[in-house]
Length: 375
Image 1 (tube, rainbow, N blue to C red):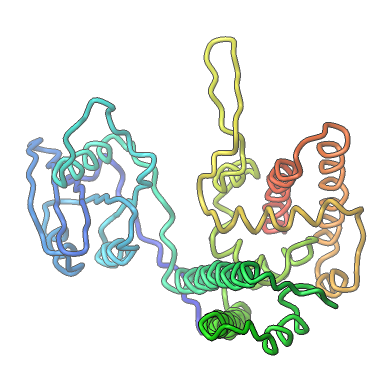
Image 2 (cartoon, helix red, strand yellow; image 1 turned 180 degrees about the horizontal axis):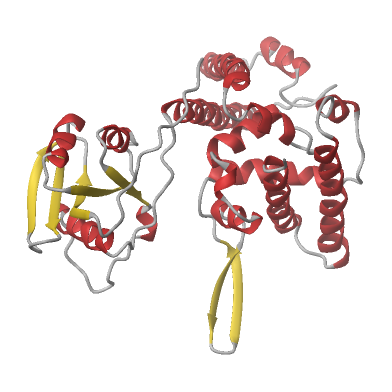
């Protein structure tokens, strides 16, 4: 699969823009509000939901045009089509659009009007528009994440069914191991209805395992030709991060270099504390949980590996083969520092282990940023 470089469009400055457009985008319709800089006239128009119709309308406006719409379920097709037509487009973060608390009327036209007003004063926070290839890999990674959740729920249903019938697996081995699966295949609950239910749950679990294996195989085949091939190999040098975790982080973050500092990446991923400060008081609360929930989960899962003393097992040594010495040195530094953080918060300060894992995940995000941007 070939990965084409993203075309760079020459963006006009704010002073060069004549027409500003705010779009309230839906699947069936688009409401456009335009403002002409020279006359100050504001107009609204209702368009069909077809991308070609919206692009044709924006291309027919006088002078240089700047367009904005909120990121949403319609994706980035419209933004890419506008960019191909030479029209600058800002895809705004919905959660950071200012909305007056006393504004009790919400319509499509008012939403588009608010967008165009904020666009004129550069008051919108844009999201990064990924390439079609990047978005395809991200969809694949998220599809695998969805199957992980479905598999967990399917296993819970089966285990609760067995619990109601006072049936438990005594080993040897752990639940959902090969021996556990063989035991489930031989199990007879006696009642026909319960037996049919158990077999249905078991069939759903087996089907999800096949689907998960298929997606993981597809991800492994796409990574070598992706723009993150080198970054994935370097992130795998960290303890607790293997191929799927590294690919997941890259797919959710995209361009690592757009974050000048590690703290900005931590904030983007929502692993920094929330804060409410006023006057002489400063109060910090739970993490903000902004950004990608999938990326946060991957970091927290990897952070649990840091509770053990620093070491290099066979698997980690194999992943670090043929990697630059400074990347391996960074990964070893990460093991030492993150274990110290875990021990300080867990043993010395008595914090709950879930809180410790999130705190370590925040520092781990910093090391991921350092390794991804290492020269």
